[in-house]
Length: 415
Picture 1: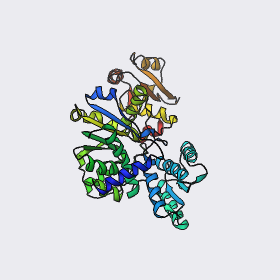
Picture 2 (picture 1 turned 135 degrees about the vertical axis):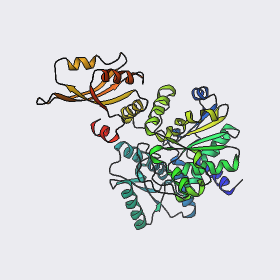
Picture 3 (picture 1 turned 60 degrees about the horizontal axis):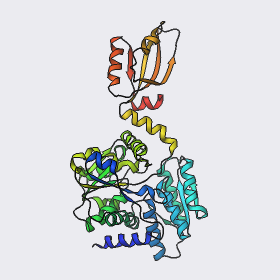
Picture 4 (picture 1 turned 180 degrees about the horizontal axis):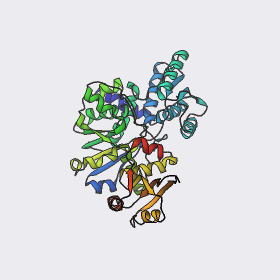
């Protein structure tokens, strides 16, 4: 057993004073669907609904053991790391200052404050996270506090490794495959670091959001690189650059072990798990399940553990998730039409809709000095094939239209 593995086991034992191990649950629905033995490691069921509490607790525990006089901790986070640190601050009775961007949703601010209580002060600074991080680090240096990094910290990585310690003990045998979401790399560094020592036969697949593939970029370049642009929808894993320490832990991996999950497809997985299994997952928490179709041939007949990393989902986002999922599945589209300004034109257009088609949005801009008006229309259907039939009927009738569903700039502005 390696020194890291022993440290991970010690971290796991220490965590028991904070919360019991999270469940490892066999999922019958997914197992039957993929003809495999599929288990979910439910990190969405920690007290703060994500695994981040593990690393924050372990780092704080070790700092306090080495420097008992250190009673002030600082972090920059708008999400799960902030909540994990807040919970740990209250547990240890220390002061925490948490910097969040000004744009942070009130729900996240309120939850962080609830977990930390009087032990936590929240500072809202910066429109963008880089500004928030810089302010937090300056404040930390001025106050002599300890900066608690979200992933690029050895003690944080050890804490996240407790996920691997638990799942191996709970399963009672080495799984064939563990599927891990990746953001900054703390969770995947910890779990693989432990399992590669304790269960060397286990294989791994890493999942990143398509718009934030920092691990894949690092593996292709041979070192961590900063992505020029990051899609923030999967906020729990949308990291522009892999950490230096986490890179050292993961540089053995190969690019073909990394799978990319399109943000809109993740929405379908979130809705499926909610509607079929009653499991609430945030976008990052659904990553490991989302790629199972890509692994279907490989995992048949095997034991697979998917780590569901978090369940901090704001239900005010549900309409957006449904919308994105429908668009990805081809069940909802937006068009701009040039509608002839003549009697009966609208009735003629409506007659082209099929029995499964439903208008979800209709905006008509009539300009009396022109022979045509512009229409923005959103259509939902039960079969993706219906749209080919619908556009075919419009083509036959010489209606002029433009499908803007996949035009990101235009759809964002108009829809």
